[in-house]
Image (cartoon, rainbow, N blue to C red):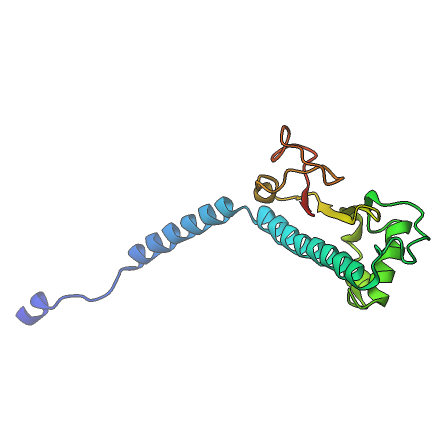
Length: 173
């Protein structure tokens, strides 16, 4: 009997384990709430849209360097009007995207894969001034507060209202 008194019990009791599990659960709930999963989804969407804006802008530049015309003026004389804050899903820009696809500057399935985002990307450009600005409006808080989110839909700098304003866009020029 005397030997049993001196033996130590190893391990945790059931109560101790339940307390630890409850504490870990409370920490997990707090962490999920702090990360704001919807904001994380918006950041992911903004990241892919920003990449798409870059693809369009570099596609226009490459098209111009090869053809010596902007894609909305494929023949140089057939330019109806330069885009001015025109989204990629409207008629003049749909033809421009097709021109860039046919020239190999955008992937052949570009409009199929990116169909949901085309209406959120705005192009302003000039054939005579060799200028292009491609913009989008961020949906996440962190991208909206980005110091580079300082333009209007037309690609003009709006230093008084941006970043953080209601109508602030992120642009590549």
